[in-house]
Length: 140
Image 1 (cartoon, rainbow, N blue to C red):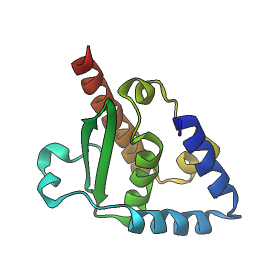
Image 2 (cartoon, one colour):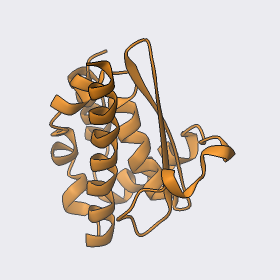
Image 3 (cartoon, rainbow, N blue to C red):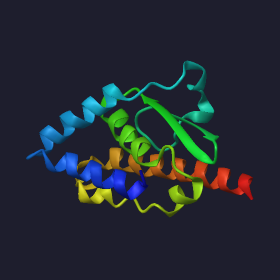
């Protein structure tokens, strides 16, 4: 699936919920279902800077596509990173760099996060894009 198709799928899922308490509960469920990062990848270098909670993100490339795994000590934050991973994992670095991630605005996530969580979301997106940039330059 393309990033846009995955984003639309996420938008459709969030449209099933009437209020933000239900959407937060869904984010928590997503966080609980997110496959955990390998313990050896819970390193200082994989910690995302700028997040209030501790968020680890690892990335590797296989057959020209990036694969992400993540973990967090906060369940809502883990739900947020799991949405990003769902949209961007198994995509090419170029597609990730080109993604505008407008689904985050459409589902209302940015406007319903606290300022510190919103900063954390920005830091997560930035880190994913940095991985994509690093791997895209390796391919050239």
